[in-house]
Length: 170
Image 1 (tube, rainbow, N blue to C red):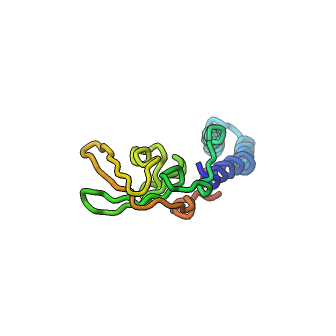
Image 2 (image 1 turned 135 degrees about the vertical axis):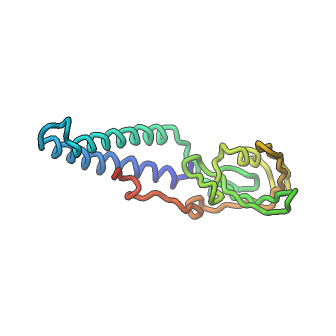
Image 3 (image 1 turned 180 degrees about the horizontal axis):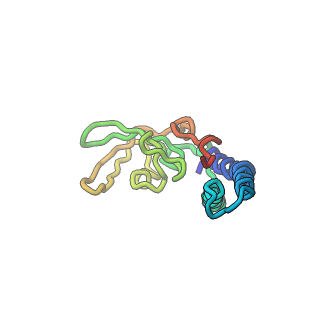
């Protein structure tokens, strides 16, 4: 994943751990002080929020531990690699398409950001300009030619960047 992708994961982890979890824990204590916990909707809601926060913290921690940070700006992009933006030509339809190869958690296929693990990205990795490649899809086989390889910051292309308001459990 990119440096910005990693930083965003760490930011969400810290926010949940240092802000959201203590806030919800306090909500749970206040609700518990109101009496019978078995029929207390506020207490049950806070307890459920804490469960969701803990699950998300566990997931984020695993992602942070397993992540491999790559700075694609340091690659030459003479060949397709992680972080490359690639303009390709569909040989059959003569249509041009542009994709940027990124990490799984950074991908937004609808915006041209495709995971390094996607079939299209795997077919392009290591290719150079003017190289042709084929990709087998469920209903057809497509052939492409690489027209251009360049670097553009992944986060400058993202349309859905999570913020602190997205990290909260409402």
